[in-house]
Image (cartoon, rainbow over all chains, first blue to last red; front, side, top):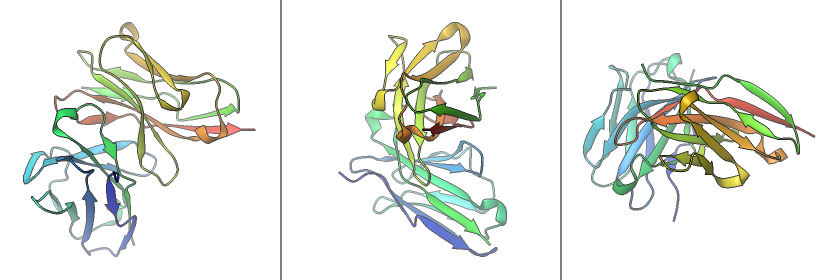
Amino acid sequence: NAGVMQNPRHLVRRRGQEARLRCSPMKGHSHVYWYRQLPEEGLKFMVYLQKENIIDESGMPKERFSAEFPKEGPSILRIQQVVRGDSAAYFCASSPPERRGYGYTFGSGTRLTVV
Amino acid sequence: AQSVTQPDIHITVSEGASLELRCNYSYGATPYLFWYVQSPGQGLQLLLKYFSGDTLVQGIKGFEAEFKRSQSSFNLRKPSVHWSDAAEYFCAVSTDSWGKLQFGAGTQVVVTP
């Protein structure tokens, strides 16, 4: 059973470009969470999604950031018009419905560098 | 406001020595409590968690943690560290029914020979 898969592992974008980060949850997991880790900081919650629904996006910046988790395919975190301050590690985690809140499984992250 | 504090940013410990990492939280009720470990360039791995019951929790890799309600603490311990324990350790709390985690800033552990 593969774990939470994130790709790409490393992503370099120039300022103003778009970044698309993908997360494939573990098999059977229908809940996805995105966290951001800025340099020298802990992880900060961004958004919680279930299939085709955004449940909590209280941690998402109001502009340029969006997330989706379609019925088919991976969850996508999209950052439009990236700026230097978006450089960070972005982690996805997943859980099955019955284990939400019980400590979910994290992927290895996507490290975004904006140049 | 809810908060998670890891007072030690950096700890150096000799291989074979004991390790204790501190974590304090601020929350009105007892939250769900977690410890995660992050190796360089890797994601986070769950070491252990506390929800209720026995306040001494056993985890993977020989780690344990003790919940002390009176001190609002959830300190992580290991009796004898191995070089492979060098990593960053994060304490986290969950206060929502669906499990949104609030993380501390982390403690970097360096293991010396």
